[in-house]
Image 1 (cartoon, rainbow, N blue to C red):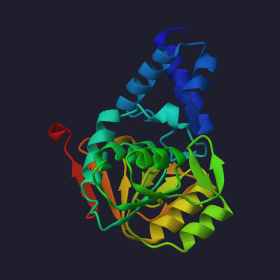
Image 2: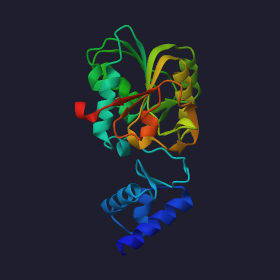
Image 3: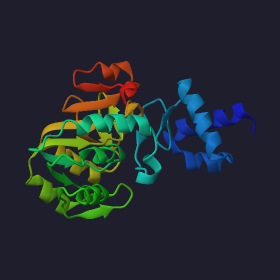
Image 4: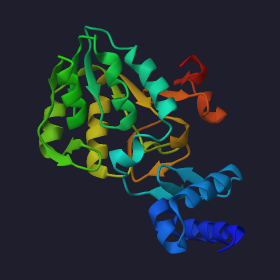
Length: 252
């Protein structure tokens, strides 16, 4: 298949479905992963679609309804994630009671917390294990383990967090939109995020530039609620918000 024909089909498929994964495009177009990724980068650069983690969405505000696994996301925009996480970790004081959400960017904070003797609460099993290995006091709620994101969800998780109050909290998000705010695909996980977010004295969203202008199924907080920590590649519209903190990658 010719290059331009393949790109035309990618645009048609994305606009029809509103969102599409790289694996789906590989099967539909009988193309390699590297070819599809290259095509998506070109189409995103030319503003013909929006490239997101593991695929693409149409530019008419298609809504993302599916999560990607931790292994799919962990190496995407890793330099930005590490810079954002390093700054976020610097905000924690030893007197803090800290909520750490599940997510790969929040996970990048953990190596920088080795010597920060705060109290940590997290609904992410892998975060809890690493913090425990560092010798920290870590609390985890009960609940149902969601394997894809390594997050605990459900009524038991909700009941535990409902009784807690955190001095500071750090959250991942799948999408940020001016109107819809901070969103995530899974309403169950989103409800845990919403509750924990509302119980934080200070709440921070950790989001690299690829998360902006994306809408997912569930809104867990409005965009003016809390702070956004992002990288210098982010669109000016979002960088200029009063509650955005921009981390310059050059400083990393």
